[in-house]
Length: 213
Image 1 (cartoon, rainbow, N blue to C red):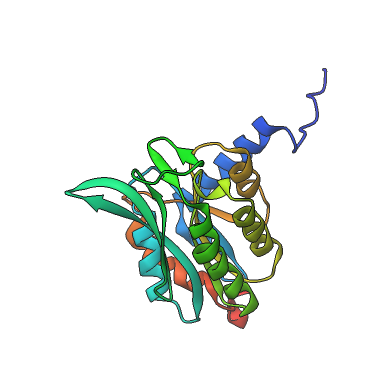
Image 2: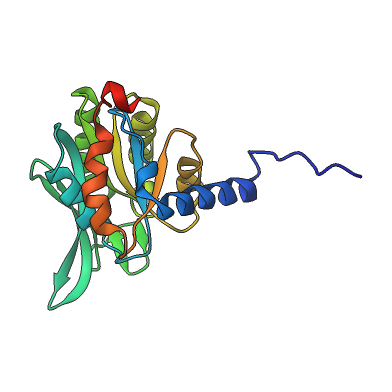
């Protein structure tokens, strides 16, 4: 009987399939999360599934200090017109807006990558230097236009500090490479598991007791 060809882990299709298997595997049970102070957790899911709100609630329940940033919508008369970055310390910067006239654009939004680098990247690197849990919301198509942001994300991934981040669900080369790393836990956020994750996720970022190892 002819043997099946060997799986090449570098094959982008295989990497995508493996990534999806890890996501679906976690979605079946939040109990698969390890308790590890250096854990790196990536939250993904459909737009509007509540990733940012989940991250904020998890951070409030953490037993250790955290630093980084959230991405929040800017609305005018109920219509979304942009996105702002807000650090856990309260600094702010406008990342994208329909009225921004900048060379970098994504869809209808002009992008201010200098605001991302001044506010967001600085918060990430400050967290790494302080050895705090790094919060990044999000690793998405707007943010990865910045080479400085991509470098900061890679620095976190290669470090031994913990990471809680949201990441773009659809396929992009940079985000796919992150999702395929063996040292990250990819979590799909859905309406039917959000509340469980609020209680489960804070426990992943602590040292396990002797009986849990």
